[in-house]
Image (cartoon, rainbow, N blue to C red; front, side, top):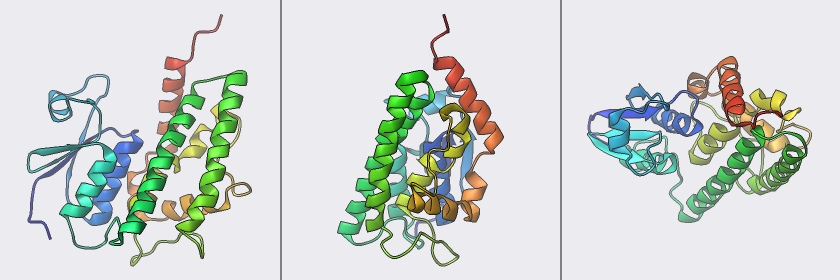
Length: 230
């Protein structure tokens, strides 16, 4: 087990990438100081710790900065080696989880782009998004072949659970912008069950922002990037 150390996380409350780092720390039982960043006025420390991307999250462990959320998840798991483990020991299983984590990232980016479109452009991109979620619904059966995901005191969320929830766990907040709920139990029974199982985990409840706050944030983003009406 890693020795007692200084752990700080630079994040922002609405960032799904900061959420996944925060959730990983809590699942692993690691005490840390959370430093809330104003992304419109980034701190000198954030710019110093992440000079390449200048983004959250940044984990600072004993003064050493680690940037990029997926890198942070693996660093946490490799540094604090006591269970629960975020990634399995088997290299093949680890590779499969990394594959799906990489798959979900551009799907989320597509969802984000859809948020700031209107009309036919939004409809076309939304159809593309749903098709990619169709692929995930089938593919994730490799990860959970026998049953829907479930978690307990003895079964904690791992690497892919954290990544998936951070990106899609609050998708229903945006239903007013899309004109529909994206991930429905009728079309995506496994993905829906996965989200619902994660929502029961105490650490997940703790790090998930209130829906009303998220809605206000999304409204701000949409108004900022939508072109002005003629």
